[in-house]
Amino acid sequence: MSKDIYDVEMAGAADAKPVPGALELLNWLGSNNIPWCVVSRNCADSILLAAQRANLPLPPLLFSRDTPPVKPAPEALWRAAEALDVPAADCVMIGDFLYDLVGARRAGMRALLVQRPQVEWKHWADATFDTLTEFVEYLRAPTPLVPWEYHHIASQDGGETTLDLLGEYVFSISSSSTDLLPLCLEQASKGVLNFFIEGEGALTAEQWFNLAGLSPVWLDQPVKEVLGHLLHARYPLARLVDDTDGFLLLPETVTVQ
Image 1 (tube, one colour):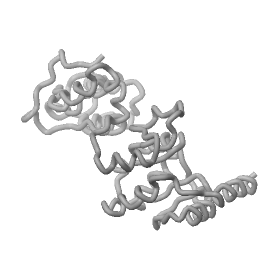
Image 2 (cartoon, one colour):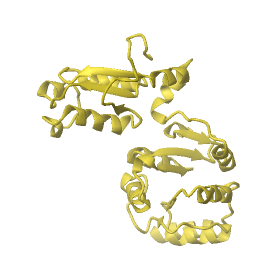
Image 3 (cartoon, one colour):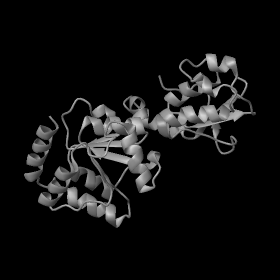
Image 4 (tube, helix red, strand yellow):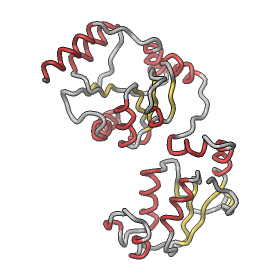
């Protein structure tokens, strides 16, 4: 079976042609000093042959099926990020297949879908571009994109305005509140980005019980550390702030259903 797959990949690589916009994208990356690499589920031989036939340069770092793990395993992308010396949270996966997007989601990276305008699974991406050329044009005159975790808000009437508004607010809560974790995660799901915990304290048994699924390893750990971990995993733009200066306190009326 592996030989059959190898032959199919090599046959496809032999006929490879550059996707319009590919060279322009690589030139843009180079001119902006942005490091990049290739992470592929194909064999290395087919990647090298395809690049040669398409007359496209390859980066020094190339990860293929020959050197597992492979996408969508997050370890495949974490390894690439480490090799690039870039935090995973600062990386963007650009791909045209479902495993590209799922892998990025699992690894805590941003994901952009290109060249697949009709697929049913585009909702996995932070943003989609029908063609690579369209993406390059966007890079030359970028505008803010709504992150994946807030698409459900932006899709509502006035949703993007609400997201902009919530950036000015802070959600303040006592470290002793038994519902601290579920309340903060609820506000984060509505687009709140700033969180202030009044006082210090360690995660109590009652606080742990009030958030189903939380590992017991977090018991008696600083509650700020616990919340920071939870926010980073699901809402990476959300953050804990040291004080409420410069923010508006979040009123109950500023919510998104």
